[in-house]
Image (tube, rainbow, N blue to C red; front, side, top):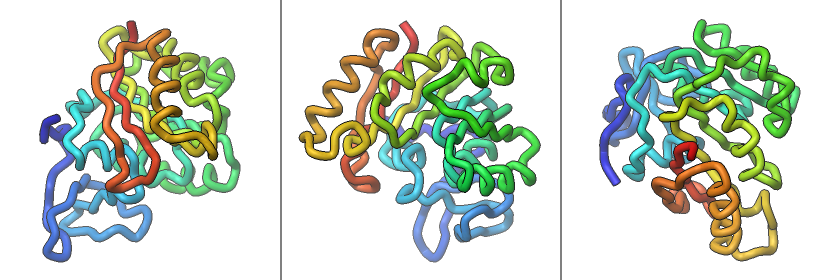
Length: 211
């Protein structure tokens, strides 16, 4: 565990409380101060990982492939401090919001695609990205990460938020997390895991590198 934050992410005070923040256009009604916007860890798995001191390997300026971007809450913060950011979202309605978020961020590229089918966007996403951020609410989360490993640089990082209920709504989350991390080991070395329950029930944050 550490408290190292990427360049472009700071701890700033909003309403008397210290919170993570990035500098950019507001997206979801978050508090702002002098151009800085609060990063709500309760609405962001990656924000929760940073709040909990997980060593993400992010330094700032990375090329990022974001899987499961939804309406753009978290990926907007990522684009504030990263380099080129490719945002994959399958559902049309949130993808429309994502396109709106991208209008204010020239480095954010929304892709209405299925993260389970990387061949459908391989012609767009550059190879050797520095980081894959994954937050997909689907069964087979490890499979998604393994299929998208092709885009990741040898020294890149996978930052995944594993949602137990998406894999099996009835199974014990600990059993689900063990099964998913074991499958991930087919292509990744697991560096760190952390339960995100303080901010997100039945989620596991995973930091991994390609083998």
